[in-house]
Amino acid sequence: MIKVSVNGEIKEIEERLNIKQLIEALKYKQKGFAVAVNTTFVSIKDYEQTIIKDGDTIDILAPVQGG
Amino acid sequence: MNNEIWEIGGKRLTSRMLIGSALYPSPASMEEAIKESQAQIVTVALRRQSAGDGGGNNFWNIIKELNINVLPNTAGCHTAKEAITTAQMAREVFGTNWIKLEVIGDQYNLQPDPFETLKATQVLIKEGFEVFPYTTDDLVVAKRLVDAGCKILMPWGSPIGSGQGLMNPSNLKAIREKFPDINLIVDAGIGRPSDAVKAMELGYDGILLNSAIALAQDPVKMAEAFKYATKAGRLAYEAGTMQKREFASPSTPTIGTPFWHQFDK
Image: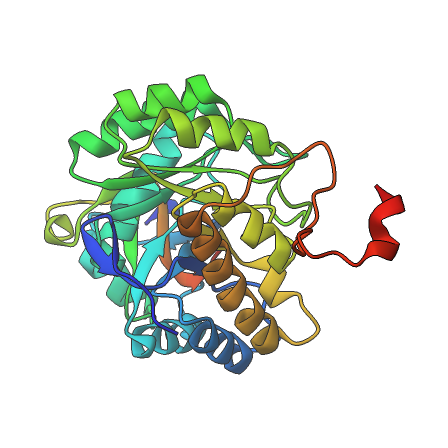
């Protein structure tokens, strides 16, 4: 298991998960969202190639109200 | 209301009001206010949402059903790097290359950071974004942003959410005169419809506001008020206002004035 930060919360996840697998494991319900790993954007087409490493910071952002 | 067509970011629009989607008392009042405003651009944002929370879906569904242009912002970013990442994420989520670039330099008055804003602008324009930069009313910053390739500038009227109106109309006017071909939007600080009228009378192409409508006692009615104010200001600009004069000048003809008024002269 490795420790990562997902949206500011520390989580223990299996090693060598890619982004697609992480999203599935989290049971993320939001329909439209985008992902950044260590403050760098990861496009949806790169989810499967992007392997999450110990200590990574993952942000999953979804639409909200804004001015 | 008949509105002439204007262009911004490659879109042809009739409304000159850009409206925010935050701070309304309820999702229903947000939806109603946006419809009443007849705005064709609505600003939205991206935030972290917990895994089991599908709550944001409801908001996004309402916005999609309005079928108007979405302008995502980078609110909350303090560096060019954060803003660039947020813009890239927004492009994927919202399916638009428009970005309201907001890089804050001071937490107290939420003043945009001109250096980080410019840095982010240079990268985002190269990546094909249509950048709507939130900036101060500083003419030199405006010039640098235009040099970087911006076709749109959004100087503030006054700090975000302050409702103080146009703090420095002469600076806003100078930007208008310097950049006749750039789309200029007054963003932030508009508190009441008279502020919108003033911005439009200066020849600005539009206004962007949120709090003034969302925090009104009746947001839907205030959206209507701003709709007319924006239009009134634009018409006044197109009509050309009269020159101010030092002295009074009668509007009623003086020829044929009865004799008993002759000693008034």
